[in-house]
Amino acid sequence: MIAPASPLTTVQLQDLTRELVTGLARVTRRIELMDDDSGDEPGLDSDQKLGLVTQRSVFERALSRMADGRYGLCETCSTPIPYGRLLLQPEDLVCGDCLSSQ
Image 1 (tube, helix red, strand yellow):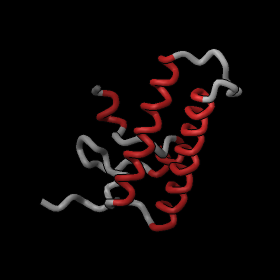
Image 2: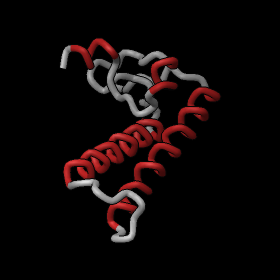
Image 3: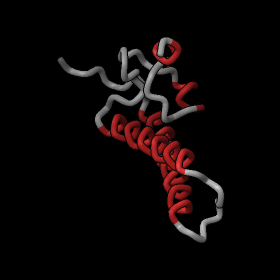
Image 4: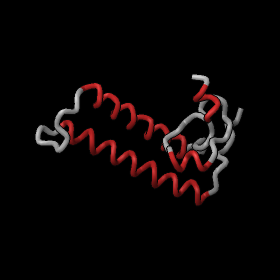
């Protein structure tokens, strides 16, 4: 079975790609600062670092889905995720219905 293609336009995908790359860079930088003993964010504990590593993984998955044409479709049910929602949370991988049922 062929996976459905992203319902987003080329311009929308370009905008969201920029947002995802920026978010990934921001999270990666925070992790790097935590790993640096002279980092600017003292006091972050292992739970916070785990949260950042998890967040980085979500950004990477979203970019992977972008590359294979599935970005913008719910990972669970393949329903299109509204563009407005993706603008607010470009790393979202599930639709609102599937998120609320988790």
